[in-house]
Every structure is written in structure tokens, then in C-alpha cells.
Amino acid sequence: MAPAVSPNQDAIYLALWTFLTGIMPVGFPVLKGQVNRVPEPPNTNFAVMTFMRQERIETNVDTVSDVVFTASIAGTVMTVSDVRIGTIDVGAQVFGTGLAGGTATQVVALLSGTGGAGTYTVTPSQIAASQQMAAGGQTFLQPTKLTIQVDVHGPDGANNAQVISTLMRDPYAVERFAELNEDVIPLYADDPKQTPFLNENQQYEDRWTVEVMLQANQTVAGIPQQFAGSLVVDLVAADDLP
Image (tube, rainbow, N blue to C red; front, side):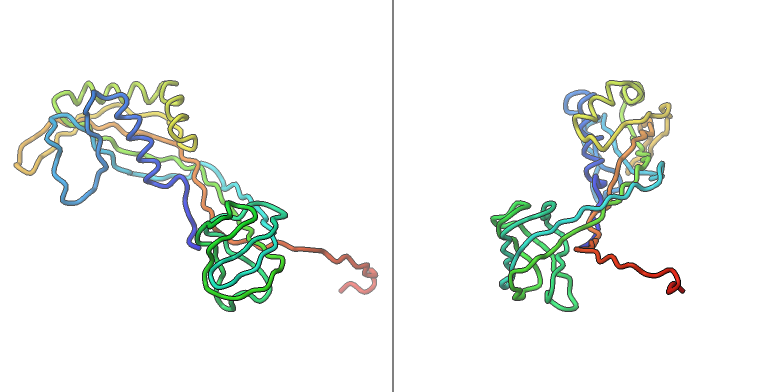
């Protein structure tokens, strides 16, 4: 399974886009930057968002989660009769005795199961008798500071940039982002800068630039982790130690 980042860049863009469209005039376009072969919108006033930097702001916080269950596999269908620990997620790697050699068995879709007893689609196709299986994993959290440049175009650019700069440094933004995505937190925005823009007709347009700083509590998940099923404790005489 490929590691998955959450919230990913698209989710962060969506949170900022929703916030900006909510504080700009009705019908004000907010676009994602660096998209090829897309002309400027016909509106005289619009904004463009572009990711600029990602900076670590904390040491990783690692968590592990064990998943233990009883299941059998016939072809690409895994039938789970009982889950003792945790929940089974799409993308999890399945560990068990005699599973497909050389290839990790992976849950690729939910059928009747939604984390507990039921059926799941797995790959590769195989036959496995009912036994105890596991699907533990690790999750790594890295709080990250993101800098997103917002270019505010049009004759009202100065006023619109001032609205963004003001509200991004206010509790209003914190409360709004909490509703949009709890893992994306506004930090602040810098002062608007006038940065003239030369369009495809070699004509200067009004543009004001604001850098918006956000904190994204991003996790990397999908890393398999095996756990010990039992421990055997023996006494060893001190004289026998190397």
C-alpha cells in the first residue's frame, strides 16, 4: 500500500478556497495556480492560490494500531467472522499463516464488512483457511507550516487583499477553518504587496499579493506494522549471560 497523506494538498486548497469565497464578493472566482492552458476568468476581479513552502514545525508524533481478527480467504473475498482488536480499513496489509507468498495481501474494498465482521475484497487472489489474521499499521503525524500565495487581481485588488489580510489574523478565521477542516489551522497573513501583472496581451493588470500561512496537522498512514501475539518469558542464570 502506498502511504497516504491527510489532509493532502487538495483538501488544504479546498479549505482555503471555501474560506476565501466566503469573504469575497458574490461570484468572485478563486482559482488554483500553476494550471496550464487555462485562460484568466472574464471577471475583472479574481484571485489565484499557489502553494509556495512547506516547513516542519514539530517533531513527528508516531502512533501504532493493532488489528486482530479471524478470517478466511477464497479468491479475492476475505470473510471475517470475528474482530478482537481494532477495525479493518481499506488499504491495510493483512498478515497470516500461508498467505500469498512474496506478495503482500491487501484489503482493497469493503463488501459487507465496514471494519468488523463481514466480507472484504483483497488482493492477490488466493485460498486461506480460517485462522487468526492481523492488519496493524503505523501513523506518523508531522505538523507543518504552509505558505500559500494568494494573488488578488483586478481594480478592487487592494481592497480585497486587505479583507484577506485582516480576517486571516482574526479569531473569525480560526472558527471558520475549524468548521471546514479541523486539521487545517490559520496562523496569519503578511501585509498585501502591489505586484503588477503582465497579461497575454502585454498589458499591465492590477494585482495585490498576500501570503497566507496555515498549519496543517498532516499524517502519513498506511505503513504496515506487525505485533507480537504472545511472549514467552524464561529465567536465565546470570552466569550464563555473555
